[in-house]
Image 1 (cartoon, chains in turn cyan, brown):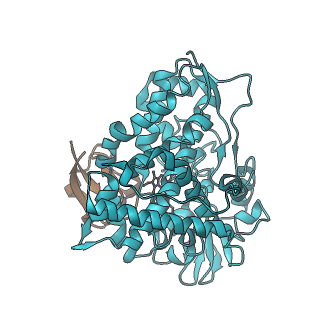
Image 2: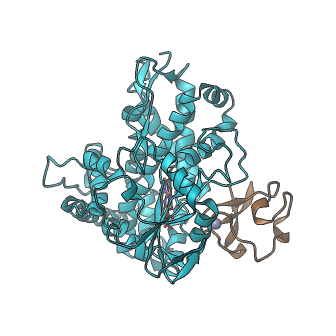
Image 3: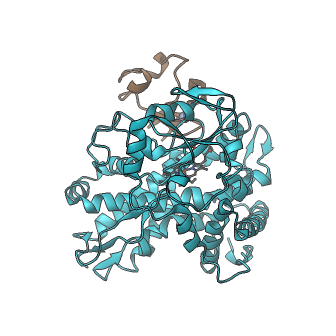
Length: 417
Length: 54
Ligand code: HEM
Ligand SMILES: [Zn+2]
């Protein structure tokens, strides 16, 4: 396909506005939210109040609502799997819905069930497995060529912060020079949750771009993801453009921001535990369990939300209709009654209890199979091509920051060039 | 290799592993799983599964 025919993206009006700085404000700089999480967990599963308010005074769009927090594994699982009582739409319309529009996260059954299946079909394991060699590997190789001969690197700045986004650009067949604007708009649109005008501006500009992209792929369909989504039919109907565009808006954040952070957490866990790094290097069949342990230990989606659709009692607390539940997935993943020594990164731990890093129930992550392919390819490439990979002892060790969407700013490493 | 896969989330049933948390012992053939059983990842019913080449 001729990239010259692609629609152009338009940058934010205010060129001085840096969404990456503001995003840091939104996710906070908490060094470690888990001691407080454990403290509250020990006092009971359901608490009144909003999770964000535990860490920052900067209000978001949930601030004025009647909020509760859920901390224990079993209770979280119960809520996530009972979508009749605990809905998505009326919770996410205050957050993601403002940025993305009518996307799957903001839907309840039966609408959700119908659209979800069509989108999931494009991300089933057998489909995304093919993207490993065709899409992920070239991105990984290209990024690594920037530092492979140097003997040292910052794996966040030079690698993890780019590769899942570049995987998406390749799917969109986005022109290289447009990528920085695209990344910026995708981050900026989330800031509707802080009521910033740039959030709405970015969402609108991405909407115009995606509409043009869909029109173009329908005119000359290829075998790419967008052509597939633009033309796929279910029950004899095409996906409405509004739903498709909203999904594409969500893709950068749902697929990029998460995988970037998940991969950074995985590398942090392994590099900080050289014995485990060595074990994985020697036996790559351990990679899947290392990924799962990283997503349990420091799952990037530390919290999500649900809406109470009818008055209900949850672990002895009466929840009124209309309450917003902060679902602390990161707390479930460190519930000491489910995971022994839960704060420890241990790829060899017993895996009978499933972690909730991808959540559970009807809204469980659509992209989990893609995320696993991406993380597997990334880790294998780093271990294969960077001999003697280790933390750089002359630099500060990686430190995950934030009360949600946690990520280290840097992972400084050395290796034999 | 062919496996039963949940079309709503992509979870695959591996007969050798079963689904112990969902009450299905390792080694249980697909046909013997009761219709009341649900996908451990997303909660879809057994009827949402298709046989897929992976
Ligand atoms: C390590 C990487 C990832 C993590 C930790 C992650 C985590 C999650 C979680 C926890 C949810 C459920 C949220 C809720 O129920 O409220 C979710 C949903 C979702 N994820 Fe992911 N995700 C990752 C990668 C991806 C990728 C690569 C994609 C790209 C397709 C993606 C697309 C989605 C979508 C579209 C949903 C909404 C599903 C629905 O509401 O039915 N995710 N993800
Ligand atoms: Zn399923």
